[in-house]
Amino acid sequence: MFVREAGTWREITPPGMVGTLMDVVFLDRAHGWVVGNDCARAKAAVYRTADGGRRWRASPVGSAGCHVGSRLELVVSDERRGWILNADEVGNPPFSFSRSVDGGAAWTERRTAPIAGSVSASASGVVWLGRSDFALPQRLYATRDDGRTWRRRVLPPPAGWGGATVFPDTPAFFGRRGVLPVTVTRKGRAGVAFYVTSDGGETWRFRSVRAVDFAPRRPGLPFVSYVPTSIASPKTWWIAPGRARPEVAVTRDQGRSWEVSTRALPRARWWKISAADAEHAWLTAYTPGRAASFTSTDGGHTWERLELPAS
Image 1: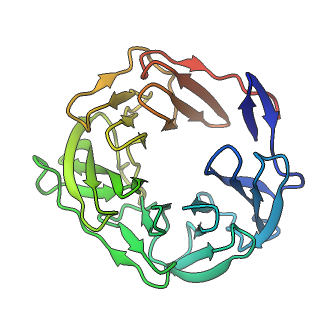
Image 2: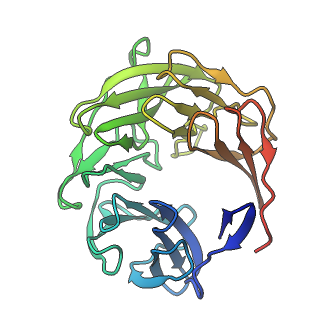
Image 3: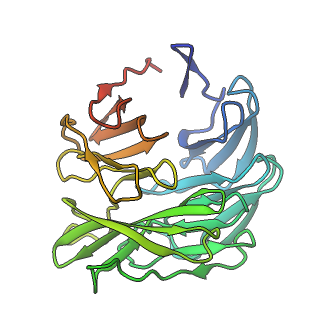
């Protein structure tokens, strides 16, 4: 694991990290958390730093299994509060959900999470659970009491997509404002819809939808794929649909208009996108046994391969 400073790379992998890297979250340049998991030895740990990865402290947590897709997902809302979802691909709900109120020094586990998916959190400490691994539509949940109880939220299909199957991702929050990407499919069509909130997620309203060339479902498989998205701000959203290669687009006005990348990115099996603002984004494309990262500094019009140091 590396961080780029003053044009050079510095390795910040926690010394002696347990197993393989599961998740990384940084609130700012100084405060970060890393999850390592060794499924064969049934050991996992959270590592925390307050100085940009120069020093780390470790705390044990429950481990994830060795099954493909099983993982530990970490989310934090501030320097004190964090949560971990143990998504076990072959387990049955409820799944393990742990929380910390002391910056990750100690973790309390509950088996309450209704689905294996992904988590996000608002600054107020409400945790959202969505992006179900399996093709279960309308699976979006929120907890206000650290996982003791979960409330399911059901979204109406977007305008013009009546009867569509709705697969909610997890929302991104900017204060009380939030944006929720949703993959929708109807009669062979696919799209990505966006719902917004201005009250911390108490209510959501449909904002826009964009039809895309994407395959959320594959015949004979129980899983669902979500249109890769990244929410950079309440108005700036990135998407990366496509079937054999990413086709990146960005909106700066909540979906009223979109700018499409003019450079073709390489073919890949799947990919992820992350954006900081309307101009800067990173995309990692995966093929079996290999991953390649790219960066754009001009709103996705051009992409440069990111050369990372050898580990």
